[in-house]
Image (cartoon, rainbow, N blue to C red; front, side, top):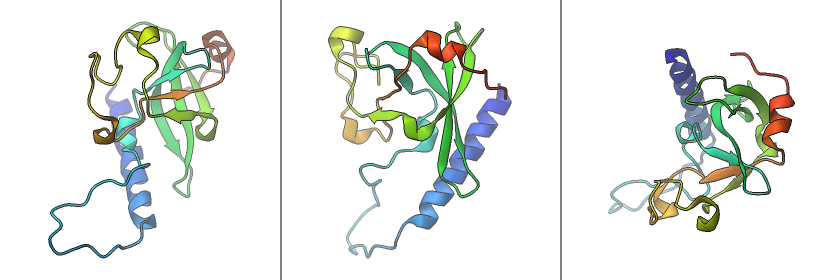
Amino acid sequence: MIAKYLATALVTTALVAGLASAQTTVASKPDSKAATMPLGEWRASKLVGVNVYNEANEKIGDINEVFLDKSGKLANVILGVGGFLGMGEHYVAVDFDKLKWVDEPVSAATTGADRTTGMANGPSRSTIWYPDHAVYNATKDQLKAMPQFKF
């Protein structure tokens, strides 16, 4: 369990370092109080745990890990499928580019609540620096049939 969190911390550090080196310097106003995260950028540490749904709005798993290639580009995410409280979960590697990232919650009629907080009226999406969920075109059974990823 600790290794999972250490790996997540290392991946997050590498991603943040890569993003920071890729940014261009922008002149700031002397009266600006603090820099804010640009829209369209997410905190990598917050991607772990994001729910993944299929096109039919059925939850098929959640993100357990994010992997980068040697150049720092996002390569794969590890989805946890099935299981209960982390026991018996099937892990599969999915190409990061195959996921569709969505900022808006799945309709309340489907879930009954805003999954970002579990409350009916969650915080504004502009104050949360990660997507609400991802969409991957597969069923839970198709993911379970994929080769298991071994940590």
